[in-house]
Length: 259
Length: 326
Ligand SMILES: Nc1ncnc2c1ncn2[C@@H]1O[C@H](COP(=O)(O)OP(=O)(O)O)[C@@H](O)[C@H]1O
Ligand SMILES: [Mg+2]
Image (tube, rainbow over all chains, first blue to last red; front, side, top):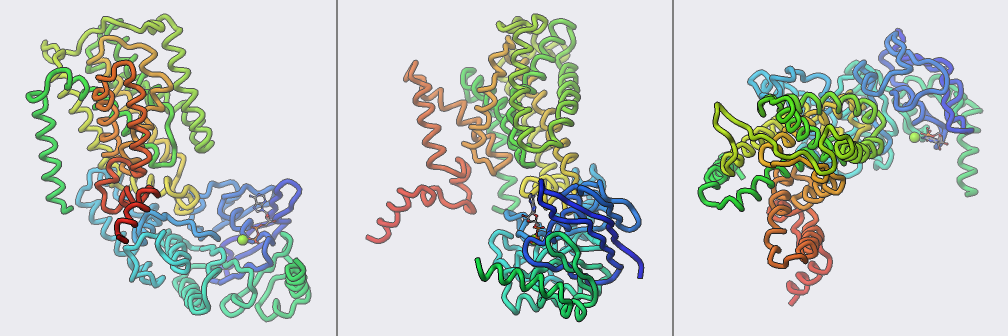
């Protein structure tokens, strides 16, 4: 399988804290990769590095064979790498449909002047975007509330909308940061099915999650982080039995039980 | 409201504005001319607030337009109409130089730069004698069209109305285009806008420079009806003033908020003229009351989507609840 994303020796320090230490990671085209680890392991920081929100302290990132280490977030998005956020970052004052349409920013180009004068060509284009957006909304199960304001949606639907916006960017690689936190078991089940469907559309997925159990079933491979270090990588069954992984998770649970 | 209803309403409003010079005396017309100018300044503030940047430099760019027109007419004997594009070019070029440093550094730096710009412009035009000094430059020539001098209040009023309508129209088209959608996205979340591939710095720059275009035009227009340009007109307090009336009109109504706010702020002091030297006190009280009682601005009262104003004021809603109970 061909490599879609590769990073070598990726590091990020916040002062003395080493949030990500010397990480090597290769994502193959068409896989669902789980990036797991206890809270504070550095998973979100890895996403922020890959998408240009943080500048790495060291290392190199290659996406589709191009060096993207020093690119701005919008440039990385334009290359086909998008993400959802751990918090619900949405355009809260806009409807579900408008939110998703914003994701089409890079595509529906009728030309600035035509767009400005609302020519027929521009309106035609607008309709096309709308249709595509509605298709994505339907795909994410948000059709019934397409005209609701994002700020008025329940938490689970807000998470789904975050993924819709990322999907609208027509990515080849999508990074999902804890897409199921705060969801009930039914919603979680639905979201997991959708993530599989996203992959079946030809989009490679990297999924961050702190609970190992949730991702076991849908991920092709797992990468485990602890204190910014990669401690294990492999098939889900291998990871489940890996003593270092068990120790990392148990250690954390003991700590939080003590606290 | 349906589209036809809206258009009819706008048509009626337009006719009233066109007929105003026949119904009003030149004193009221002069206030309307001020309203037009302040509307353009307020529109620029609301325009850039769309991309999440509060402008404190409005009066500075207004001054650039005004001084360019005034000096070119007086010293180079250029036609007023040619000084308008000259003002625009200077405001956009200077703006581009300054903002390519400020905008990539985010909102706080932009805000600080804005303050520095107003203060610097005021100091420069005041202390460099070429610009006329603190007393200002007076005896400005009047604009002419084909030998006809535009000096009467109705003519000046129509000229301003023309500028204002062009301004509103272009802003309206922008707000409803793809650019407007990107601006909205930036205004609600820079992070998310970035993640969908919006070049935040470039879109913000475009917004601010388009704002500068109309600020320069407002400056030229000021020269057309004012016989003097002086630093005190373009001072820092005036820049803050602009923000205040945008809030009064309703900060979330990017087109009508500034218009309503500008009308209120120019007419309120006139009503309190009878109070003579105590006028500023009454004006201040009126403004404070408006801001407390109408958090969504004056337009908010008429907006059914906004929460009714009496429900937003706690003691008043307590009162209405009591009324319901009894
Ligand atoms: N912007 C930041 N400034 C300082 N420390 C940070 C910042 N972002 C993350 N960290 C720290 O880096 C570590 C990893 O955080 P994060 O990547 O959010 O973990 P995870 O997503 O795995 O829970 C944490 O200790 C966190 O406090
Ligand atoms: Mg995280």
